[in-house]
Each structure stands twice: as C-alpha cells, then as structure tokens.
Image 1 (cartoon, rainbow, N blue to C red):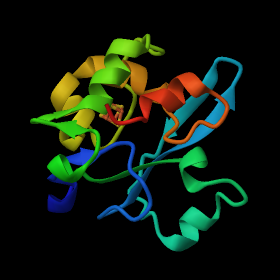
Image 2: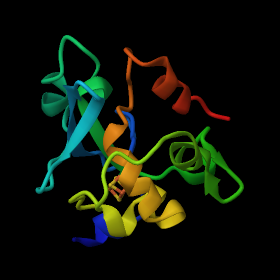
Image 3: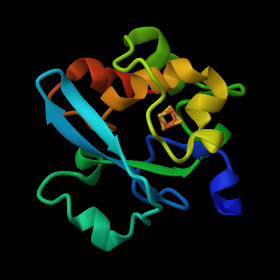
Image 4: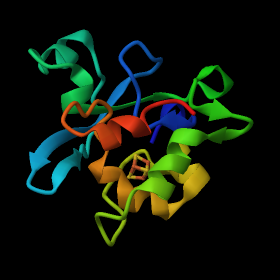
Length: 140
Ligand code: SF4
C-alpha cells in the first residue's frame, strides 16, 4: 500500500471525488447486490467509468476516494453518519472480513470496525432497485 492509499478513504465514493479508485464491482444476486472487491489497484479513470454505460458508474462500481470529512454531507462532528447507518440498519451478509485492499485506510472500518465490513458487500452506492438501501445514501 502506497502513501496515497494510507490516507483515509471513502468506500462509497462518487465520480469527481479526489484520488478515485475502483474498490469493487457490484453484481446482482438473488439476495441483492454483492460486491466483488478488486485485488489490484485500478484508477477510476473516465474510460473505466464509461464501461458502466448505459447505467451510472455507481450502479456498477464501488469506488473509493479521499474522504472529504467535514465537507461531505454525510459527515457530522467527527463521524461518518453513512457508516453508522450501514451498521445500524443492515444485517451482516458475510461471516468473515471480505478481501478488501483499502481496509487500513477505510473510513467505515476505521470508525465502525469489522461490523462495517460484514455488511459492506451488500452496498451499491446507487441502488435504483432498492429504496431501503437508497435511503442509506441520504445524508442525515
Ligand atoms: S467497510 Fe470494510 S470491506 Fe467495506 S470498503 Fe471498508 S474496509 Fe473494505
């Protein structure tokens, strides 16, 4: 992991955020979306994001980027409220930590620990099919 990756990173980033990387690919399953985490560092370039067409990149990719901290609508005080909602509103979907390469710098993990990781694979940043998970994305 290089110095850039050691900075605290948002694991549900949006195109346009700084230092954007592809964290994983979201696949539909009978149980809902599931993320396959990438083992290698892949820059989320415009060309890569365009591979999601005709849907939005955030329906297909989980992206990571520099945590915007207090300038993000999800951040209140010193805490990411989205990470709190993931842990409080969702049940775990795996029993062991997913093979995720950003864990040491992930905002959700740094704040909520392994409980975030056990729920993380079901999160699509943009889930047009599930209003429940879409609600998770609302700042509050
Ligand atoms: S919550 Fe855990 S599995 Fe999800 S991106 Fe962060 S470190 Fe990886």
